[in-house]
Image 1 (cartoon, rainbow, N blue to C red):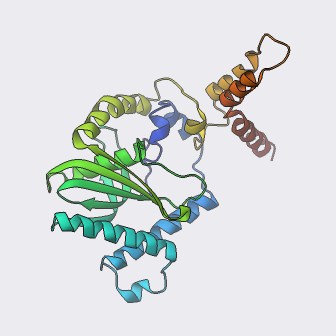
Image 2: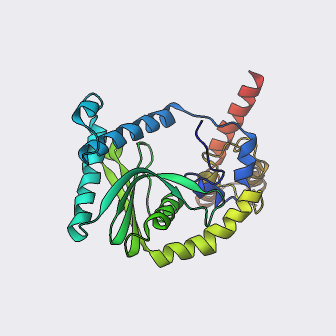
Image 3: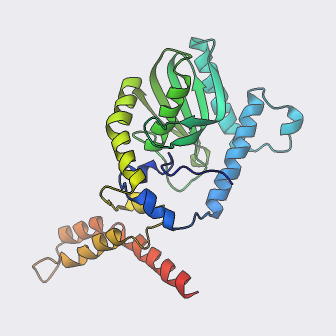
Amino acid sequence: MAKHALLSASGAHRWLECTPSALLELQFPQTTSEYAEEGTAAHELCELTARYFLGEVSEMDFENRRDELANDYARFVTEKTKAAQESCEDAFTELEVRVDFSKYVKDGFGTGDCIIVADKVLEIVDFKYGKGVRVEATGNPQMRLYALGALLKYNTLFDIDSVRMTIFQPRLSGVQSSDEITVKELLEWAEKYVKPRAKLAYKGEGEIAPSEEVCKFCRAKAQCKARADKNLKLFDEAPDAMLLTPEEAGAILEKAADIQAWLTDLEGLVSSTLL
């Protein structure tokens, strides 16, 4: 069974904001879904196709497993590799690379889908199979942690000034989102923001900070008391007038963005307990 990091890059948006959630989640079993399994299969196929395009896999090994989504990703990676080699002939690409950022996050590691190593700019490409929600690269903590690990792994090979992070979502018409920061900015973010919050998260300390985004994939979300208290407090904020104004109704809807999801999670908890 694959080892999972307590403070994973994929869960960084959660444990960086709600530091106690990392240990809290350990009380609940890991679950999977049809969508997660699809994503895993898509990643494996895209990796194989990209290796074929890059000349690392023979045609015989590849021919029975090709797929249009994977071809799009493989062409995308190959074009980026060629572009990097135009300005740095020694540039190279590595796929499905384990990156270690434990210098800043205890036991922290992850797997980068694609890392293009070149002089001046190091690029991280992350493949997202989902089609329901567009994932943005800007300020994305998962991508930044991958970038941090990649920088620590390859910074002795080239003089790297900045890191570019690109998300490729083929099921959203090949939508891509990119963000680029300097090495100095990345290291400052890691030292001043990530490192202290990771220490809190590893100990299960800090302030619980429920929100729609943070709680979305948290395994403790249905039973989290802080999330329940936050949502229940909305019912105590009744306006003075007998009738709601449109502005007051809008304010309630904005504050209650997580309530519908929370009630659904509670229904699931109660149903599973009864069954």
